[in-house]
Length: 416
Ligand code: EPU
Image (cartoon, rainbow, N blue to C red):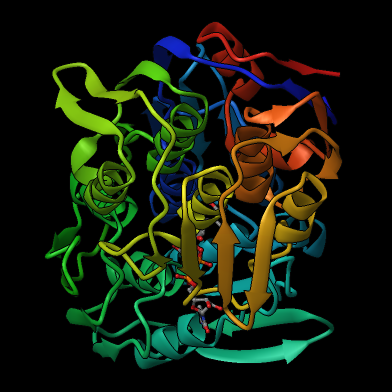
């Protein structure tokens, strides 16, 4: 599937099953490098990023299997080659998160340096500085980081910014370090709390994950476990955005309202009704959305991953909304695509001014990345005629059965 055809749709009605969180499962998979044995993960989405992380683990010497839909078995025999090759890291930046666990378990790691991506530069200086505090040393040659640490020693790590990846890499190393590590200004995302709960089941001692101070008392060894991945809040947010644009009533089965409070509050301001339900999140959108201003921030602020969804919603909302990006400099590339669909959007630095129009106009467009690709599909639900979203493989990196799930609730969407 590399193209998705979308026609104006709505109202959407029915239940959407929300899959496991991509940004959690990738880190749990990396964490299996910390202990030999057999791990079993449940609620694992069938998406390209999981396949690629599986390939990386396989390259290092693990066995990765799908014993049943939604399940992932990972067998680590304790003799990994601690190396992440360029072909895999370049394809998926999240691969960098193997650095911490490999250093902790194997005392060395050779990991390709990730380049920039479509959001602009994405440095890893905070990952490296944090690991250095624990005693790791790095050399750079031929596009690779050669990392070494005979024995990691617990330390205080003060992150300059609550980076998700840096928090995870340091956490994954600190669990096997000698003594206590305190990570200050840690990222607070639900995926970090999920990682900590996975590590604690393995025998780690992690306190405070989900808050800005995480304390880790190092242990000598960890053991494999079985774990169920938390639901994907960005997938849930995407279906709420689709509902906002197309109207209707949906139940997002398995979604966690408490993981997306701020997003839900914003959609409430825009005129949607959303509430927690025993099965997930119930939501209704009965009229054209009202425009609001939005500013992205680290969790619990509005996630940068929601931003393209807001721009898509505002493109057909009533009024003018200003969207400010505070995390990734280049994350406005899809705006030109929305403009091709008739949206009235002006960008200036890290701000976008979106003047809502009642209806967009279907056009051929290209998905620049996972979230922006999904947002183009969302916007197309309120575009007259047909929109063809090209480069749809980006969407498949992070969304399980995206087209099928949309079709099941009445959207006129098909892979082509
Ligand atoms: N940053 C640095 N130095 C570092 C690390 C980060 O300057 O060493 C900067 C980044 O350049 C960026 C900001 O800090 O400007 C935030 O980056 P962060 O490290 O928090 O993001 P990440 O770990 O690279 C994860 C998600 C992203 C999500 C961000 C922010 C995964 C695999 N990726 O990236 O998700 O947008 O957190 O919440 O967990 C996606 O799912 O499509 C996606 C891009």
